[in-house]
Image (cartoon, rainbow, N blue to C red):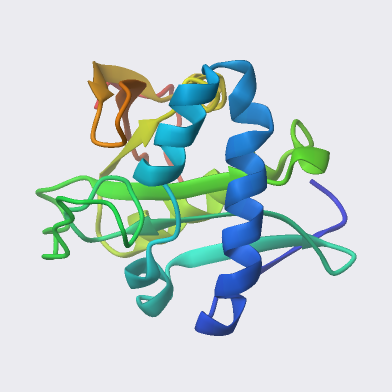
Length: 188
């Protein structure tokens, strides 16, 4: 994870983030989905300007090159972009609800270089600091191995066909441990 810088995304970053997300969907995710599912994924996934406005969305760079992005949210919406139907921006309750890990994307040139792990660690720490004791996310088939390797457990598998073709997804969760505690990860 050396050589990366992390900063909070702003509205000025949106055009570059849209390009990164499209490249991520067309690149690494294409190994797990059919071309029709990739097209549907573009209609289901993408930029959520609410988490940018909430200042909980991170950008990872390497020598001023966008390497990845992702964030966390204290809002009900579990996944999807501004254009995805069914978004619920109402707030969650820390200590009762699970915070959401959202919109994780890695530029194809930076896959398997620690970008995802770095974002997850920072998001989990921020959610913990905000009073959340667990996190949930909705993973693509391409992202699932990263989350399993970082202690996330499957809650449910489902398909989302709102993009015109069924795209397989998995809702996953993780209990957040206090920074000073030891032990493995519990089921969410």
